[in-house]
Length: 91
Image (tube, rainbow, N blue to C red):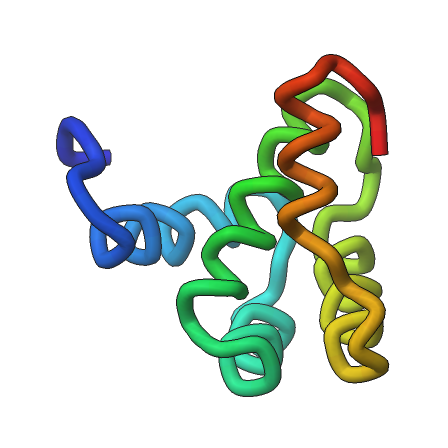
């Protein structure tokens, strides 16, 4: 995917390349970016990708769409999700 990630732009670019490989449609990705903003959507993608890689999420597109709905209801707390992942707790 082009080497190391040095900033959000690199992570966003890689997310765009990986998204079709794990089953996130272009439409779902565009909606996530429009509704959550590019950086939050990219962070959400990173979480979805990691959970999919560990077998916790079978439908990454559906999971991302659920995150978009939660964000719309102001009920998405990515910082908590990442904190729990780093602490070894599943979210």
